[in-house]
Length: 476
Image (tube, rainbow, N blue to C red; front, side, top):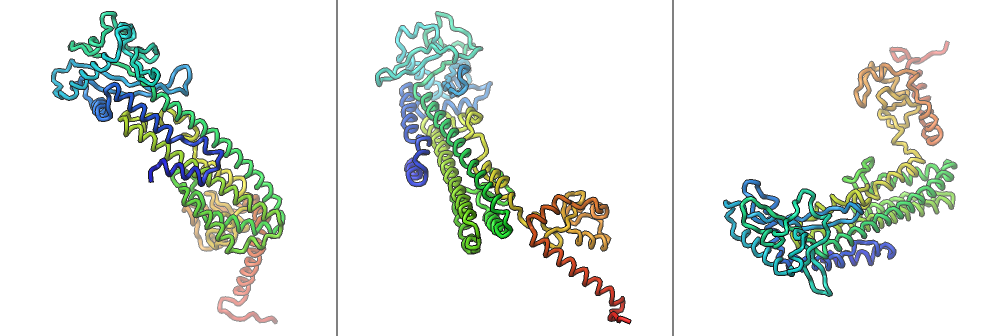
């Protein structure tokens, strides 16, 4: 299926109607490209010809330069840094006698004659004959000499009156090189349209991000209220554990663009998340109605973010495709130069992905409201690290496991092998803030840990009481 049809179908089926107007107008841009092609052909610069001339420019050696080369430049105007001015520079130089490509030579002669025929006598006598402009005069194309002196390079010398005729520009003198700047009519319109559409996409993204951030803050407040009750706290932890395990947008702890899922995978992961929630039965155990409402809002927010990502993806693809089509039909090579020129002007192109920024906010504002047990587990016994001893290297262990390490004469951190991290640990390494957090958010686990510790101590005392020969303790 052609991309234009895919874009039209996607916008019609999956995207909110109020967003559609801000999308890349692919069909309108295609029509404008066709007009650019018509203008180039009017000047005798067919696609194959331009491809040859521009490739000659890219591959040219100073010592063996061809007699005619083309270079398409995109620049921003000094008056308005957001307006793009495209210009096609034709360099004519017949001083190199060693250049043997008759085809390139003939192209230069034909181009010179074509432009000369298109210019009338009055225009030919203008002082500004190095810059010519294509105009649409009532549906007919017309070549005139441009008055846009700002496009003339500062280092270009002013032509003498006797050099006004184009014969002077393609003179066969061995020491002369001449440049003709051609300003088309439709290419500037193409870039203006594209720039305006990118501005609209920037604005829409900012508006939708603000909406989601506001929704995140509302959900966060509802969860703060819900977690005050211990039963609700544990149910929300279970829900968020399922959410994190689903790795909806990124792999766990890898929030950077290269690890982002595509829209299809995100949709699949969201569906899997809801399926796992349903299988767990946790929703039927939520006691408060507000918790059910909050979870539904959380789910809706994620699907809304998915819509934004789908919209961003289809527009990124539309931008890539339309620039590729421009190059394919004109050979002007803008697919890299245009993005570089405007990237800093558009958050749509330069900013982090919506998923990256919003997922960070979700993580900071919602997920971290209810800590996960995995983040506070002792890596040795895998239970909650209570009482928590934080070594100088930063790793966390429960006090019982640390004591055992010392008893076994192990001095280095078992995680990172930092020398003497265990040996140097003492009461000052007790992390009081983390201990209070554990008591507040993991009361059941802390209670179980203390019970296990007491049981283990009792077992040790019992074994010690037996004596080194294992004899039973006799009360006298």
